[in-house]
Image (cartoon, rainbow, N blue to C red; front, side):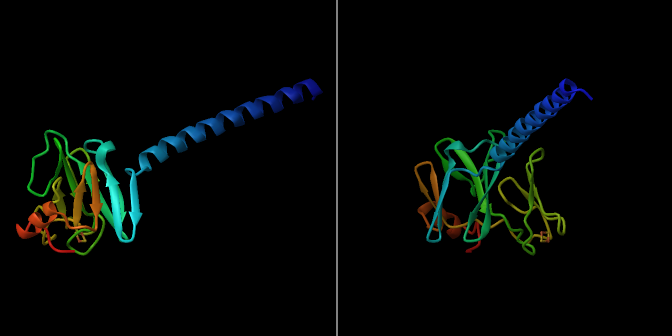
Length: 172
Ligand code: FES
């Protein structure tokens, strides 16, 4: 093999490698974007989540005191529910993402707006209300306080107390 031919092959290899690297970075960036939670701050048992960038029907999973927290901005065609957290004209479903049967983490099915628990088949609607057994009750709502477009998890604001008093969620 002449030097010229070898040099050309090396160049092609480097060019292909560079393309693969750029593609890989692009894929990673896309994946990271979809993993990015909402802007949030965690401090001393409180998690503050900024809901202003939430997208309709896109489930975001946050963390509060070691538990997964579901945050779902409802679309206009999703039924309103007394368990919704209302900020301006937006409605959100926020719950602890642990099945009330035996504690598995349900998955959100975007197409039919259902939380499905694969462990024993429990279903919850987009408001977290259980659809029959085996789940004995709706997904629990964590204590929250509304602060503008932010939600402070761990503080019991008046909206949360109202839900508790109405029996819309269990105490956690
Ligand atoms: Fe979810 Fe049993 S833990 S159905």
